Amino acid sequence: MDSVPELLSFAAQVFEKHGGIAERDDNHVMALLPPGLAHSLDLPEEVRLGEEAMPLLYGSPVLDRLIQVATEEIPLVFGRIEVPYLKKAGFDQLIGQDIVFTNGQVRVTGRAEARTSYMVLTCRYVALSDERKEGLVEVGTHESTGAIIEDFETLWPEFRPEFYTPGKVPPHFSIHLEKAIPNAMRKARVLAEEKLTDFIKSMRRRLRRDVKNTREYYDALRKEMEASLSHHNLSEAQRDERIAKIEDLPREMAQKIEDLQQKYKIQVRLRPCAALRFLIDVVHIMVEIRFRKHTRTIHLIWNPLSRRLDPLVCERCYETTRSVHAHEEDSRFRLLCASCAQK
Ligand SMILES: [Zn+2]
Image 1 (cartoon, protein in one colour):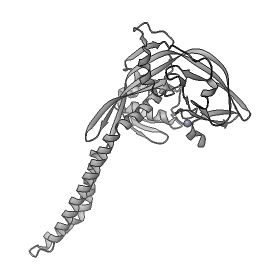
Image 2 (cartoon, rainbow, N blue to C red):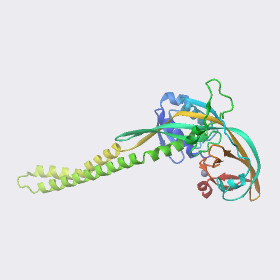
Image 3 (cartoon, rainbow, N blue to C red):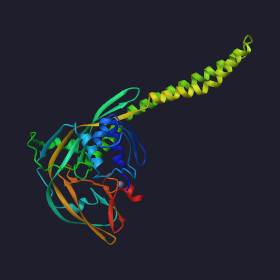
Image 4 (cartoon, rainbow, N blue to C red):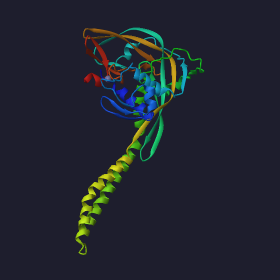
């Protein structure tokens, strides 16, 4: 079974944050882990994660241990949001608007009030290059599906949540965060890279400028040295020495350019630093989907903070999506995002 690509990125992030060295490939992560980390994860110090011998999948014990390591130092705050209003009817119109099913026939079959949990994960990013830049990003997710909820992080304060005192937290929070944490961290990385756009551009601009200057410098140097060969008072040995130096210039220049590329290389480190978890009353909308000769019933969530349906996650890559494609597989069908449906 193939590993989930998002989980490989997540694993690489956890390894790096805890002092390991990780290299991400298409279908695996190669890593060198410090002994303490290897021990907590129950992995060898030199590990190749993601291939047949050691796949990385939702529900696998190694993923549980990675999440444990990633979250154990994060301060958690628990709260509850009372909502003034839960939508009673008119859900049919939201299908095709909030969530689009591109194929299959979709019918709303029921509605039920339910309580569910969401998380706002705050992550700190640090970009290291010739200069350093850091900041915070926040991501809202539905805890059990791992769907990224747009704007959740700005919506919740408007609803004046009530926070639970430690030790008085009710047991209704999801204990399964294996989708929420990796998805939130992946989204946080995207947001951090957006915030770093100017920084990245400026490092690239400086690299281009320095490379250009280096090339011009060596070009001028070569011309000067070539001109000096025609001096009459050079001995044979001095001439040979200068020719050797001229011939060595391209190598020397390549080395200088390589050093510059190292100097301006950008490394972005990301780590979760706080999580707010909320219990919220929502509406579950039961939906029957018919595709070819198959039928499935799923539930959608009407979110009272955003006043719209929450997006779904792709059943193959776990990417959050509002455009869902039924895809026949064996004797059933899966609900996929646009890019998985095309493969
Ligand atoms: Zn997908």
